[in-house]
Amino acid sequence: MNKEKIMHAMQHAQSLGADFADIRYKDINMESLRMENGMLVNCGTERSQGYGIRVYISGAMGFAASNDPEDLIKTTETAVQTAKTSLNHLKDKTKLDFKKPAEATYKTPVVKNPFEVSMTEKLKLMHDVDSNLQQADGVSRSYVNLAFRTDHVIFADTTGSLIVQDFCQSTAAIGAIAFSADDVQRRSYINVVRAGFEGIEDMKLTERAKIIGEESVALLHAEECPVGDFDIILTPRQMFLQIHESVGHPTELDRILGSEAAFAGRSFVQTDNITGEHIQYGSEHVNIVADAFCPLGLGTFLYDDEGVPAQRIPLIENGKLVGLQTSRDNALKINQNSSGAGLSDGWRNLPIVRMTNINLLPGALTMDELISGIRYGFIFDENKSWSIDDLRINFQFSCEMAREIKDGKLTGRIFKNPIYAGKTIDFWSSCTGVGNQDTWELVGVPNCGKGQPMQMMRVSHGSSPARFHKVKVGV
Image 1 (cartoon, rainbow, N blue to C red):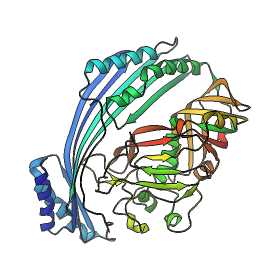
Image 2: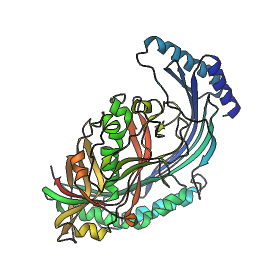
Image 3: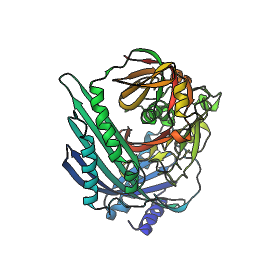
Image 4: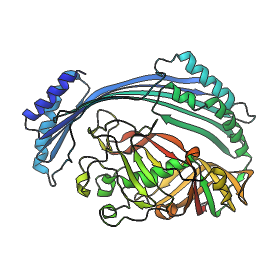
């Protein structure tokens, strides 16, 4: 879309009485491939492009979107009229925090554009991975997914901002499933990074595939995980979802204020936990940040969808809750400026508070040192399913596999169907150690749903393995 036309639309909104207006144009291209048992079962491309215009008049907001470039002025007028109509029903005026106008460009660092990599090269990789998944005797099914996405985004507003950003995202998901007459077990790996095809190559999928196939069969013959209160270590492949559900979502200010509740509930956190005395959210080992600068992260950018600069916001410091994720329309309610978390999944929807990259900072322990601190317990790896209540307090997670620890050492024994449960603050308070930087891993989440109409966003979580004391294991 022409930048001059975009800026003209912003000027037009002002001429119609807008106190403030902004526009997000997005051109999104996607490609997806899926192979099952060595056969290509899906190969498709999709493109979505359009723009959304947001207008504020006397504290009332109006929004309109279109995928027709010729309707730009008409869509602007619709947004203005919606804002004026909303004034008649307005109870509380919206106040946007201050931000400086900005002109900038940004591109995801890319070595190999995935849309320029030949289909031959992609299919060869998928066949090699699938072949290794199937090597273990007893694998019943295998799958390999690759997906790629680019976002060309133009943001402009009535303060004079004009920001152009280009993002590139690469996804891989592989898995092996083993069947018996009375059981089904799966081992899998999925990750999503903001990078080109080199991000897929760095995942070393062919090497992982052989191990995944072998472990799926081994789980089929393993015993059920013991039940009781045990010390456990969660790998980054499980920690990512623990962080996402019990820290990421509860610290979104719109949930706390109640303006987001319909799809995934609210939060036990209160605003005075930040504006007053900070609550103890976890042990002194727990340090978590919202980091929009994290390399490869899906929540990494230069500016968010409200034109707010990327930031690195501490959420939990030495176990104390010290920060929240905010956007321009709610940050002033806690006397702060936006944390740069106003994001939308495309051009059709308004930006709402969304996670950037919510990361548990590394500690000082090696993996051997984490293990040596457990008399009897387990390492839980790779999420299988989860459940958490609508205030983000009570949760239950199941994982694909548990590795046994006895007298500070791995025994080599594995268990299937491990489940653990807890309450958010109690659980994080039981953290007795976090692995060091050498054990840190970033895991991408491609499908975080929020809002109505629902927006499906992408977010990453970095973590080292973390150890927790006397966790309830089993149903």
